[in-house]
Image 1 (cartoon, rainbow, N blue to C red):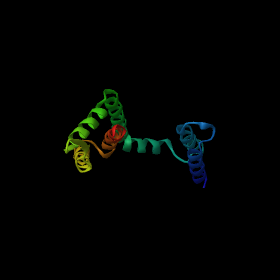
Image 2: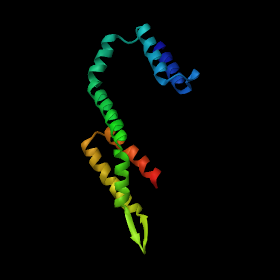
Image 3: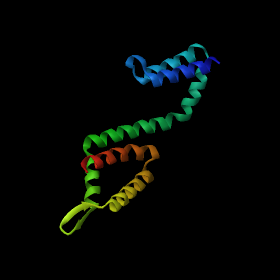
Image 4: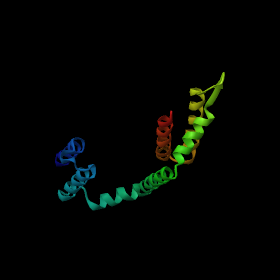
Length: 136
């Protein structure tokens, strides 16, 4: 019952966020109280960490890769290339074909998800979509 109370109060504090504190403060407090009341043993934490350390490290690496690509202007470059290939000319009027745009986006997402995990594809395609719609 105590574990449920700590869990519920942590969730309420996470959603309510009193005193404008960051989210990590409330989740750390919940974890701290679980340790203080000995509801979770340190051996259990080590076991869970041994299960997820590689995927957590991969996610951190993908986030660093995404920030690096953003700093290099890669997302704006790809967005401009996708828009360039999506153009059509009709009676001396140039416009963006939505069918071509969707086709190129689908192909790009296909190759991204083939080389990266789903998280990596999401971290890379989201800034490209934002750059696409900010230039339209």
